[in-house]
Image 1 (cartoon, rainbow, N blue to C red):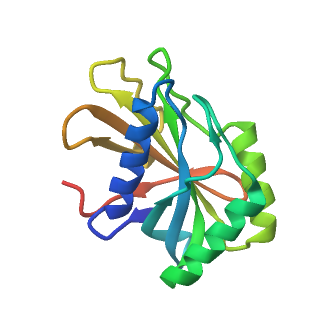
Image 2 (image 1 turned 90 degrees about the vertical axis):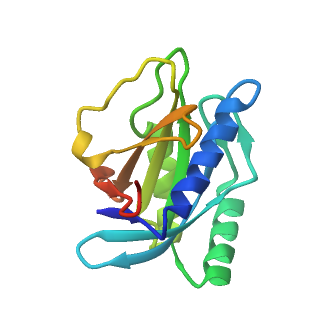
Image 3 (image 1 turned 60 degrees about the vertical axis):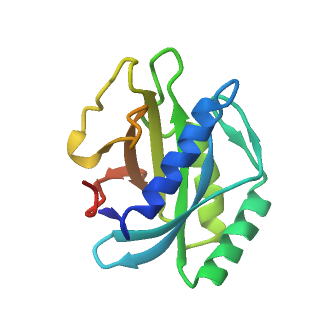
Length: 177
């Protein structure tokens, strides 16, 4: 299970990154770092999400230099005194349809980084939809967090995956609502 705490500040950070990418002139994916603690039985507590400001962002991917990303993740981990658990990235709605999973490129870049940083175990996707547009619910609803932005402008589907198999794991935000 993947738990986002305290008071969902990491979730708000990821939502803000998703909003900025969605509102960009040509929509852009965004990505960032997930920091926190690993608990027993494959349970992860996400305490902090930090957007990555580097890389080249397009509508369907973030092209980045893994070495720079790794150095920044390790620096954040040291500065915050938290374990670098993984990363998040956004998927924008394009023609009413966002991506609902991890692409082969997502998986491969995560595998490469996890070889260097054994603590990397979690990938979160934040799918963002305009509130007025189509709404496609994923088949595995019990593992997906559904969120409406405070201003009511966006809807988000937050999904968690764990490495090495990239199986979907439940995402919870206990302070939500």
